[in-house]
Length: 281
Image (cartoon, rainbow, N blue to C red; front, side, top):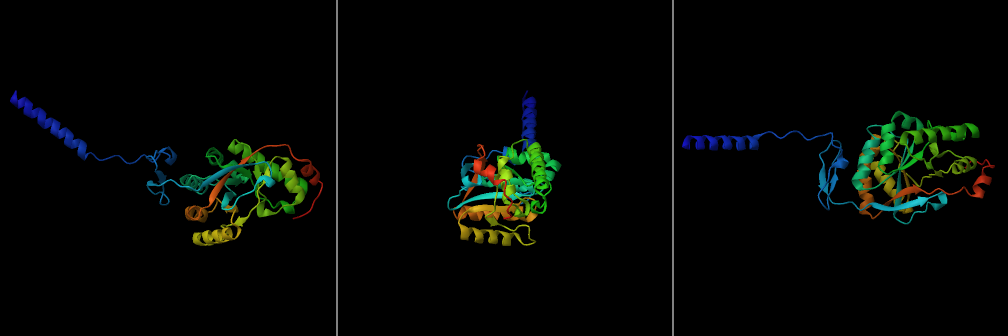
């Protein structure tokens, strides 16, 4: 009996020892970061590409949601900005931008090229499903000012339909490629219940320059205006690289990021009448 008791104790000790020395399995990298729950009053953040999640305090960069039915409604208060991204989506770039926006708890306005949305529909849908504002940027980024009115509108409509199909949501905003437009085209876009997105602050992230230079240029322009729509491009690696620093600076200086939503209303008579004029801006 005593021998049996000793043997039982030895077996239990061995089992406990095995549990304490068993190698832990590798983290499940298939888990999406948004599904990881952080402790109360804490938020997940990332130090860089492929970095391990770390905990940080909640961000306070998110501002109000602004509902607009026309450009006239798009009035920002002092220290308010809209983050807009053109030319995507593209894997490896757009998804990084989305992760950074999520980290800071803010949304952007993505002006998608129809051809890109067709090529990457899953990513385009994710942009919309994450609660970002969806806009179109023509089908293949054509310079509409160099086309006839009919050809330009065909390009606008084709892009709008492609982005709508890819994102499975309404496309309510539009930006002219190269900001090349005409009064008649602006009026025609408005009649399609889309708000033309202008640019107040051009980050010029399309220049071959450093992320630090892009951040500094953007902040310098913002300091002069005090508010505005910031133009960036989610197709450039340098944009995703500089974005955390830019958002941190905005937060530190007390800026708020506004989320845009479209409010559909009948097109005003003056917009319908203005389509008869063709004046290049």
